[in-house]
Image (cartoon, rainbow, N blue to C red; front, side):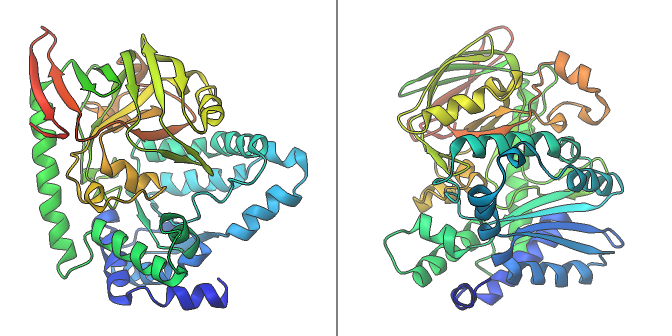
Length: 418
């Protein structure tokens, strides 16, 4: 962290930052006495990393191990790294992470890097490095998507990120505004943050219980540019808010979160849909996405911006052009009301109903912790190296739940719960 970055970061409210750290440990992870914690973060987020370490050790953590990244080091690789190096990744690191998660280590990720950091770099190198990293990360990612351990993602308002969200105001003001937006969305802008999360989790639980009681066969979407049917996986289960990992610990994986979500049937999606918000993906803004599905697979894809990158994503592997998640978010969510484009999926996906290309979550099946990969695939679950969310909901979106006998039940009207 440079001296300037440090002085800008000093403008972030330390009380609210400490609340965020406390919520991450007590709500996001529900860290248990004696449990180790593996933490990744951009180096600029050290003030938050340190507060998390304090709250983790107060909660009885065994060992807190931080792994820091740095934007300048990342850029140095693309500008000076040997060409052959872009087909490699730190396999040993991810294998170690997988071993740690198998041993019941909790996982915390702090996001906050400049979302457009790689926008000026060679897109071929970016794609190669991304694919190599995705392959290497599989041993650790499987532990996360299978919910083997308790994990959580939160955000820190870095100066480079703030400048992307608020490009037309002084940097110190931008950092303060992004910090306020993060604190509000994360429900730490007032006293009693832990209690506020308990209340919010109860509301999300009501939604999931209603949806699970309905046992819909499919969801039908209508809206401008959209006429889409998403079949739901056999034995799917809706999740939202706090959920229990396979290690028995109930945690909130995402802070903030406004969604309830489940697994679509990767071979029963048909129709066409357009995006309602841009997707920021590895330094590229992909805007006005329009795709058409046949038998679960995207057979036509367009975008007014970033189309080449979108098509490369869809070619990642067999499952990249199929869906692994469908999520419902009301248009009146706090993040939507903020009117901000965060250029970060953790926030932007909680502004609108969305779908995700790629890997499904095994926890979104009844008794998912007992299903084998072959059983998950047979029930319609998708497998892929990627999992990329993009937004399709708006104030003009209607969604019906469709039962196996064809009977329809209103779920969303004009972007709100019916």
